[in-house]
Image 1: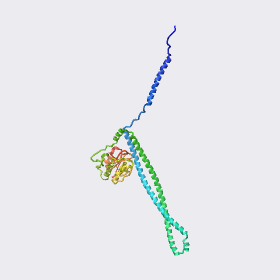
Image 2: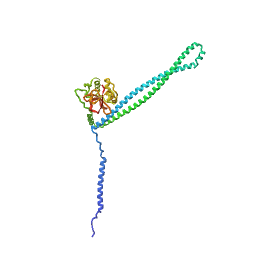
Image 3: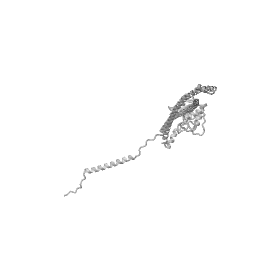
Length: 360
């Protein structure tokens, strides 16, 4: 009797099919996972906190202050060198004019000798129709010869002096060119630091900028002994009523009257100031001449400790003495802070104290 059993599927084939299905599913899952991973947005770097941003901006501003003082120094040196060069060039021009006059006189003498033919006095006397008149003229020629000698010596001296002055003018022009190059370098350095600070500020949202401004706003102290720390937003000119007198009080009063005017590197007023430009202008108003840079001003007057400060003293900050303000009493100074800010009253503790000088 014939068997009607259903043919059995080989075990190996069935297992292989299931394995193939399993591998296919795993492959699809892997492709899907890789696809999702590839399409996911890259993780954003963590944003710095407002306090960190403030620290970075403060560092850039302080570096810009150092560069500003170097710029001020180069600017002053360039102006001095330009004045010296112009003076030397004027002297060369004057000496050249004198030499041209001497050449003209010597030329007249040469022409006169040519007209007389260069004959000796004895020969001219023998052929003269009027010996007495000739003798009189010959006496004049003797005097002219002495005059010629004097003119020649004068011309030689002028040549030597002109040569020296031209060498001095050339050297001065070379120094002027060097000063101008340094000035351009320092200006670029300031602008680079300020641009970096501005780029950092531009990356902030409006809310972040508001928080940063609050952190950067100095909180001054007040007392009955010194009401000079009035707000820089005040529309009226503040009146200093502290303990300073005489020229120190005049300098303080002037500086306080500049509140609200912008900080501009290299500026000495009247519409804007940098830090040393403000202190220089304030003491100029009091009849005292200060150097242009913080480094120059830190050499003037007498040294004063922080504990012995009194109104009118110049206070310098940071280890490089790159910033300066005027102490007004009660722990406050008036100063021009940095680019983007205006002349203001701020607490002495706002920046690291370096040294102080008493000017009067």
